[in-house]
Image 1 (cartoon, rainbow, N blue to C red):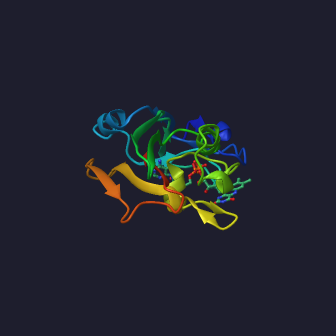
Image 2 (cartoon, rainbow, N blue to C red):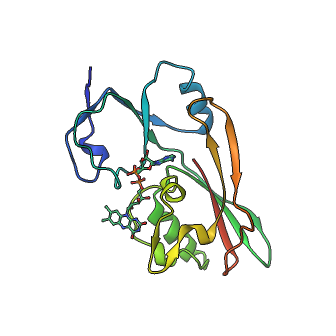
Image 3 (cartoon, helix red, strand yellow):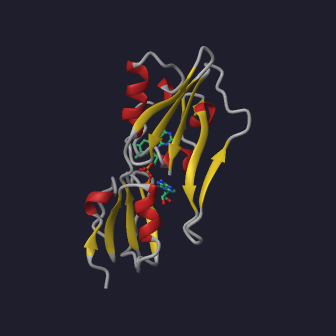
Length: 165
Ligand SMILES: Cc1cc2nc3c(=O)[nH]c(=O)nc-3n(C[C@H](O)[C@H](O)[C@H](O)COP(=O)(O)OP(=O)(O)OC[C@H]3O[C@@H](n4cnc5c(N)ncnc54)[C@H](O)[C@@H]3O)c2cc1C
């Protein structure tokens, strides 16, 4: 039975329904959910790059993994680890408030940090890939956690970040 409205979970405000909408609070939470009866499901971030045209026969897992920490800093680069459920624009504002260049052209792009590497968001000639280092991902069919690292991952400005999906 498609029971729960998605009206608050997509920026078009389309009142389609899904089986349920559940929040994911951490990678371990997701791993434990994968052992439950949540199939079939789809992942959703801010819902700004989807157009829902009908009710969805899926459970919707909303990524609400939060957190932002500097994990490495030296004269050459600074690495920030960011939860996939953080709002992308807030990450950009955080970098600017800490005098970190690199993401400023990508301000005001709607959506979540976790979706950014999936979409490789870009604006004004800059793509998120230029500052991206790595991400932690969960394979949704096998439940295996993986760490995916981009080769030669240093931006021209020397500022880099990673996200947890
Ligand atoms: C007004 C407006 C302006 C925009 N401007 C730009 C722009 O300038 N540049 C640009 O590149 N884009 C732009 N976009 C597109 C949008 O902002 C990006 O695609 C953004 O990355 C979507 O993020 P989201 O969290 O809303 O993704 P959602 O819409 O929630 O999801 C999009 C897709 O990504 C998948 N996904 C989401 N999160 C995860 C995750 N953690 N792990 C795995 N899969 C995931 C979903 O399953 C879905 O398939 C714009 C959109 C709007 C509405």
